[in-house]
Length: 404
Image (cartoon, rainbow, N blue to C red; front, side, top):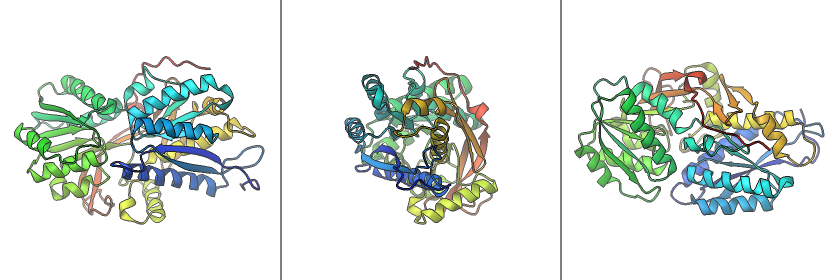
């Protein structure tokens, strides 16, 4: 495959917090998307009848604010960008879904698609499902089910503390945590439950002190970014020795913050971990490290790579010549099924929820059995202790899709 001479790139507007307290998460996403598009472009770009075209990621800084995300969307519209990618806030994702729905109804000749790689409030592919929105991450209830498959086997656990960020995703995590604990471990007592402002708390010592004083043996949290790192650091400072059952405890400073205290005590769920024990997975991870050798940049997500592969596949199948057409791509993206580095996933057309494997892993020292790779140069990595096939992770939906 070769690119058509002077071929216009197919642009993807990445709307993400690239400044402010969660800037590190936005930059990590950007690296993932760039690496994914580079792989497509290296094989000649997206194959189309009129000539192959490259993929290009354009950055829009939402500053971690929903209103800024909507402003960024308007800028993307002004620049005639059809494809929008966002994920690091379910609140922002919800607003973007509403705005894109309205825009597409108002301007059918300039319709847009929304590719969601991390906003995991279950409502987004249930009651709020949209033909123009595709989620490539497992939603919070799916992740909770995977995490609970390990938690329910912790027979020593009697008391647990629930803490999360006070917005739609954090609320959904605590709600589902209560529900699944009641059904699967009714003997476990919830000794504390708390929601805190998102990305605004600089000192988590008061929260950590309450957790320790509660007698909790474990913490269940969906916290991410600095809200997780600072919580883990504070817990260590007050001498909390319990287990952290997390959605995102495997990166962005959390392992280094916990240090030795986290060994065997920090459990995380993800679509993939660097220590998935296959040659294909290892080669995939090693190639990312070659591209981004700085240990601080060690934040690779299989789902973001699968998302770009799905998009490239859908555009090729749509076979559009000229401007990118959201409706024709959406019709093909509903049928996406991709394999990369041994991971196979598919898009469920009924609700646009990606169906993929999930894994649960526990923190350990690099070099321990099953921990070849560490995280962010910390000396600590994650050993996979549970694998769920896509069929095991799949859950029913409440989507009533309105199709154009």
